[in-house]
Length: 205
View: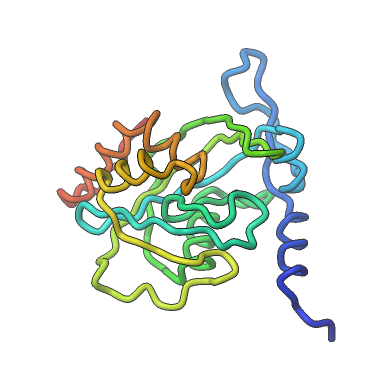
């Protein structure tokens, strides 16, 4: 039996098929979907699907520091979970799967909007159509043993505390999280208020 190493896991992750897409004739909507290797999507600037989760406890957002061995934006802070649906996997199934695989949590999350962004990170490209999800979790409960291959640290912070940290140390945060906290901040604020009020209805982007 072959030994499973950190390198094996990373190689398998890079070869995983995720969901890419072509634009429709107008150029503003998702057209034909097709499979692509995750690394190819990020090296060749191919538009593809992604998910992002925002898990709140009161007015605090759970953020994670990505493991330093991650091929993309390792050792940087991001929102609760960020990932890509596998080929032919639904966005909601991906959100639930990655919440468990990264943080060991099996709690319900709800989609609240879709956003798009593009960014270059070194030799890699972010060209994402993101399905956003949110949920609630009592920070007094133990998250447990999160996956050290994925996550090196977690913190609960208010949005204003995150703003201050990004302002002081932007190099410590992923490009997408900085985009979320700037370009889509109104949507995240609205979501936070809805969660604190116990509202379960989706917030649309």
